[in-house]
Image (cartoon, rainbow, N blue to C red; front, side):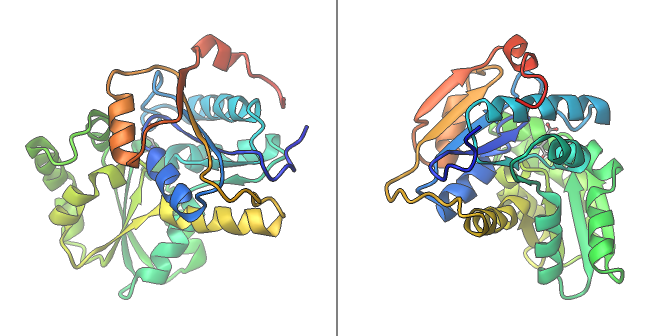
Length: 279
Ligand code: DGL
């Protein structure tokens, strides 16, 4: 196994296109690093599935990335970070970075009134991933959570500025507006795609926290601390794999990342499932 090679890529996975918000951040912090991305577009959403299923899918996604010789894995999915991070860390011998701790820490550094809102999938909210983490770090903080499952298909559809998105955001966020929060964690990596709408509906006095941004700094620290930062000076290569190529994936991904995809390939679900055991 050659995971100590600093020229190896960083592996990033999500259930769909949401993890691209994390790719974008990591690529801007670490432009010379190569990235292999896996989006499980055939099985999205993860957020309404059982913990056992999310753990099983996350392990398959991570093993697939391992087969591409990644040196570190970023779980660019809050749902998978909420329920599968221990299973992933137990199985994998490379560093695994999740979304919850970096997002919670950034929110605590941001809030002034110690009233924090969290929006995420059913799985992330029902597992109390953020509220447990926030209260563990600061037991004075008050946390108000709301599951917003329809934001995922809206983001996958590319409805970043659609009337329906405003109406749904209004419905989901109205109860958080009454809670006098000054900070709102976007606890799903799909949500930054809808940040314009979310910001307008929640109000400009609330700071949005993108856990992908928070995690990017941690990735850099890990690479530096373990001597794993690439020495290459050019622009890193970005390879994308998905379990189903939806017609819109390429368009939405390129529009969102602001650059053409170097490489896009579909991975058969049967092949994905065949990645069993610890490589
Ligand atoms: N993007 C994912 C997250 O951060 C999950 C969306 C889903 O598959 O439900 O939670």
